[in-house]
Image (cartoon, rainbow, N blue to C red):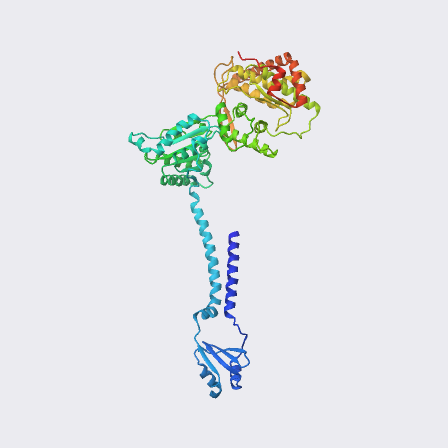
Length: 609
């Protein structure tokens, strides 16, 4: 509509300009009066006319006083014949200068044709632009099924390489084979080797799957087609399959190249589980992807890289040999990798002399690369808001807590009683965590509200662990129940502040019984099969593979694990009451205790033997 209005105003402006030009051409420099033929005859008879100019059917008479009179005659009749028929004395014409001028084509066009032709031109142009707009809409409708893939062509100035990806050493080693094949395919073909046609990148969100795919294209210096799985699927049936065909046609023209499909689980879910049967749009799209990948020839040099964090829901046909032959697992970064990732993201940020990225890496166990990048960005924002010229350790520590828990809520008004309960609650968590050898060391305690938490205790392991023992889980349950336990011990009643702790402790105890097989009475087996069902929302459905009698025993074992944790927490709180009171006093005074201040109160953490 806006374009239509703009075109209409443009046509209107052009019309006024042409009308002004026409008016200028048609107007004479001398004022003239249009009269009848009898007036001209009377002027000639009275000897008032000095000159007559005939141009076609137009007669212009110049009077002796300088005025001009214009009249018209029949085009086929001559002037002399006309005047003779009207009784003009020929002797009167002898003193008058008579000139005959041929009418120019331009004058004829301006005077006779343009007034009729101009409106037709404007109306025709208006309809032409309208039809062109409709044709453009039709062409867009016809191109609805075309691929919308983003084409990144790497150049030397702006390309991603493996140097820009910190950590993920094993994943990069796997992908180097892809790079070598794309750059030197001949040496592989000469030996009859076939490079994997598809590479599936598996990993948690934020671990750098897309960045790794772009780095492969940057290292190989080939075109990179990027498309998300959700971009294939539209409300119209067949559009997804059409876009898949269009994408692979583009790729074949640009070979060697890389086709990257992000979040492939959006279209690659197991078939036969939907409500639409074989006409389900997502299944149609998946079928076309399978066909296109099977249609590749070994010499086409097209590599399909896909990324997902849900490999368990993918269709088995996607994972068979000949399609996604290779699966590259990208784990969360360990301590050294986190430090390297922080170094990469800190390249263009001014860091203070006191910044120790290793300490930041120690506090961020379980963080992904995207989380670490977010921490540095939040720290830069905090420093800028405070007018600093560089980022210091305090900004980074504050950013970690902001990302993990939420921003500080210093404006939240709480009573002295609530503040005291919060101090005892957090002191209980910290005290139990410190004196349990299997629990992680305490790094910070605070009774300042953040996010939805009234206070918090930060713990971080000394080293990354991938396997956990039963004793570690019991200790974690004890730490979670410590806040509840200390409230009951000191105030003889409990508050709602321990609700989330109780929920996490119960969930952990259930996992010990049903998932990890750590129950002494029920034995080493799992209970229940959990499946994700997508119907009117995301639901986790558990299919029971045990009887009601076993369900009662599971509940008893869960309660038993929780009681073990509670007993451990209660013993430490009663035995270390002096240290507990000292921690509470320090928290009420300072509101926040860092690791060094906390260790001065409670001493060194007992070693795990």
